[in-house]
Image (cartoon, rainbow, N blue to C red):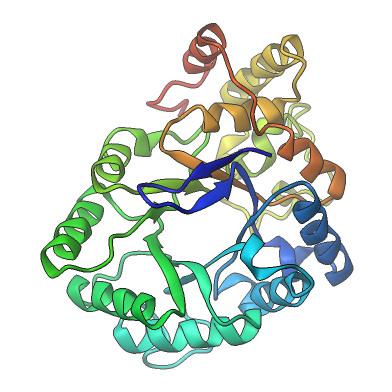
Length: 319
């Protein structure tokens, strides 16, 4: 496993990280979740991504329990704040009150004294940005949070946050967590330059486009038990299963075979070829799948392969 600095900070994270959205404490049984967490650690994965809202807080609880056996210094644990977990006024958004109380609740569920990274899960239009940034800085000053970042913020929001933090003397944000993969490259145009200018690195989610880029849906027959089979839960995935996209994925499979990589490894290696990406978060459902994903770390793609993938999956998207 290779490691990269996260943004302009000194924090090192594994190129492949383990996520817990939908899986840990959710679609996977607890024993299977535990198996994946321990497999990740054995593979050299040090970054574990979760959020207060993942599976009603159950993801944090399971992750915290299973990570107890390891030296805390060897772990980088990231969680998030924004979404409503319990319901009621002040249980939502990025107010000082909600950030502080959500952080305390996350620490209890994780059974930890601090989190390495606390990210704002979305931008809060209803709270002054200064209030949010001051709360994050105060949590860092308290030692309960070591670094702070954002997720799914616009270029303008990131630039404004960086400007305010600099003016106020706050600790700078170090990360952005966008959805980024061969089928979703929209953030390259404006968000990436804003992040680079502000010193934010990317810890990306959905690098495999929920499995579409692994080729699992190439036959047009939806595999039983797959996320695409649950249309109510994954309606946003279905638009990616078009003939044009599946054709591009099939062509990618041929490139991967020639490189002696799986399609998933090729897709992950492509994301890691982007200099702003520090880590690609995977949501594996089996130890074998996680091991295959982890093997993408350290893979370097030549310019010809990158050009072929760029032609198959243009930044403007396949529609």
